Image: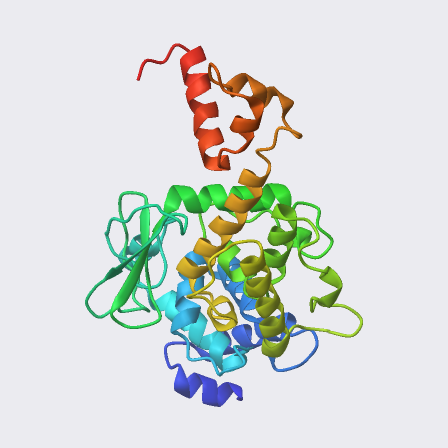
Length: 322
């Protein structure tokens, strides 16, 4: 699309502005493909417009990209237009860690899905964020009438865990650390590599990483087919280590359905952490034996019960009266 057509479509921009945006886009499109990926567009707009990551991320969701999710010049100008049209008040409402599709001031609860609670609602205006409260984020579901609440503290904790265990990884280490107060971690999960690496951290050698699609000599950039293959491996492998994957498919991960990804991450992390509650790894666990209890009886206890006993043991030793 030439400059004149762009200026006619976006009359709010002067011709010099259009030239500037076109030049900025061409600098991003180093391979002269006519498009850039979403991550590149978000990073560029975050820097040039001095907007928070999640504000730019949300604005890009409102841009009508084609099925390839490639950001072309017209899309990039549309993105910048949306960011510049936002009033200061709207920006303040969108700023901060509690933002995503269909935000609202709603309460939720923790559970097996790791700080994610589903609840029915009225029609969800998925592209119109509003500021949440109480350390919780409400995101729109797959249908217009569903919403899901995410606990902000747990999101930060899981992101911090990923930053710690995957630091230095040959394939995803360059993406780290993920900010604890944005949704950048979710976007990085869409190609399946971060989730696959997390599974192998929790349960070593679950996935033969040689079968994963990644950028290299043969693959210059992962497409939807590559991502689908990776995410199918992730889902099957997560199921294999005991995670519940009934309501999640490869498409949900590629489409970055935050509540489903967070629920899966929580189960993977939980599996890994509880798997380390082993007297062979921590022989000091013998101190948790109760009067008359044998080591054999103790070892038959579920990991969750041993963890609870460990917690109460330290509370008692600290003189904490419950």
